Image 1 (cartoon, rainbow, N blue to C red):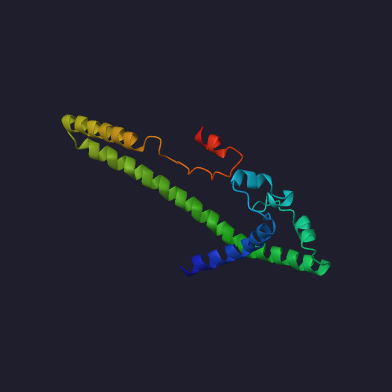
Image 2: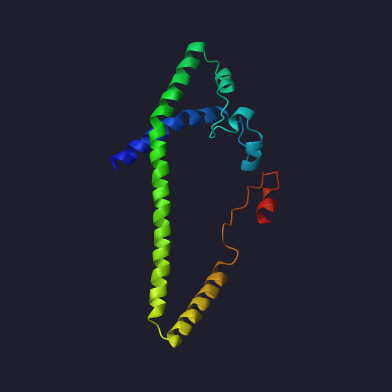
Length: 166
């Protein structure tokens, strides 16, 4: 648990530079539509979360001195060095998690086969009917309700409502 908290803290510190940078990119008046807002971001802010953030433009906008620029660079490098092994651990844990999911899937399939092996032909037929009935009920109950988004506010001028409903 402590390792997880330390990992979360270091990741938060690593990302804090980017979060503060994004605050600087905010417009004077917020745009109602996220699609339009992304179009109107300053060019150097569009990839803040990616590895190609343009720190030079960012530093120029803040009017950092040469000393501050060097300190910021050292801080970024220090945080990346500290976070690098943690990112590797995270990647390894994600791979382990994926392997466990695959093992569980195989176990469910095996369990299903073993269960069906103990059933009679009549029971197997009844099981298939029950599954088909439940699939049908599920489809009827959930038809068209997946990933429904709330409509955009009326002040949105980019016609996102038409885009999301298609």
